[in-house]
Length: 275
Image 1 (cartoon, helix red, strand yellow):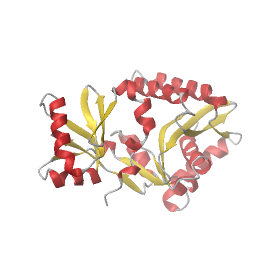
Image 2 (tube, one colour):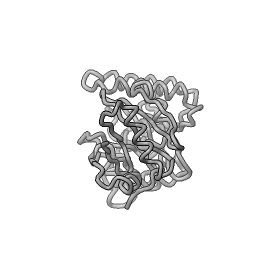
Image 3 (cartoon, one colour):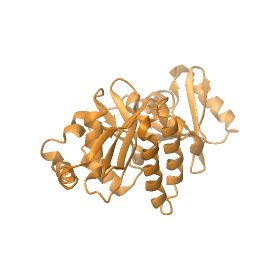
């Protein structure tokens, strides 16, 4: 089934805002289309056009060709419904599946309750965490703890940045998020052990049904803490949405296994389109 575009993480303004510096994000409008240009890993591309009328797609494509000096160009992160829209106008369109960037969307109540046989592993991790750290405290992220959460996030990234240079961009995005937390309408929660922040998660409600989880960090020295921060935020922070989009796995094998183990309700499929 083709999932509506409003489930996708690209629909979160916060993603575009906090990553704008690293990815040189720019936008414009043309014939009622919203056009967003991105540069990632030294590759220029456009996100799928939002809005507009299908009858004006040929004019849009010609304008983008002219903008790109008549060189080939790409759309990345195009949803199935948009591919279908484009194929009605361009039936021979070159489309490539981008599995590494598919979003994992879960029923919030499943993440909050982790009930039933299929969540047996997650329940065990969570129960083990509670047993080993009975005095842990979960709290909502408020202005009083922004600096503590950011400091924890900075330390988390800096310990790993030599092996993963992409964390430099994530660090910048995280700083932008905490500086503008309230203005962006972000929400989240944190776990404190022995008085110190050892995990946090935050995201953004993008419509009445869906919230996108942008960042989740935890100290792996505390066994089960990732299961705990996942459950606690779903249970206490996102009570007014039906779905939680936990974004993509970026092709990282361990991350893919972890996200699949929570049994997503569906994945938001994305494709790259070439002109």
